[in-house]
Length: 159
Image (cartoon, rainbow, N blue to C red; front, side, top):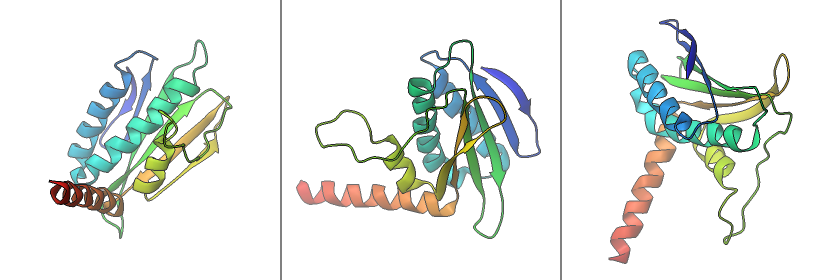
C-alpha cells in the first residue's frame, strides 16, 4: 500500500499493488476512515462494495507497471453520513452489470454493488483507464441490514 493523502478533510487516497493482501488491507483502511469520520453505520455496506470493486480491478483491470488507486470520500448531508468509494485502474475495459447463471462461480459482484450501494457508475479519468465509484449512505446500510434479517428469518423457518 502506498498512501498519497490521508487527512482529516474527509478524503483518503491509497495505491495498491496486485498482491493477495490488497483487498483485505483496503478494507482495514476503510474501517479506520469511517471510524474517524463517525460513519460506522455504513461500514458493512461500504466494506462489501469496496471488496467487490477492488477485486474487479485486481482481476480485470490489471495493467503491467500500474497500481490500482482507491479513494474514500466522506459524504455528509440530508441522508446522513456516508462514503463515496472510488477504484481507479489503468484498463480501458469497463465493467458491466450482468446476471450470472445459477451454475456460474463468478459474475455477481456488480449485482451486489447495484443492490447495496445507493448509486454507482463508471467514469473516465485523466490519463489511461477509468474510475468505478459507488456511494453508500444510511439507505445502503438499511438495505444490507434488511437482507441479513431476511436471511435469518429464512434460516429460522428452515430449522
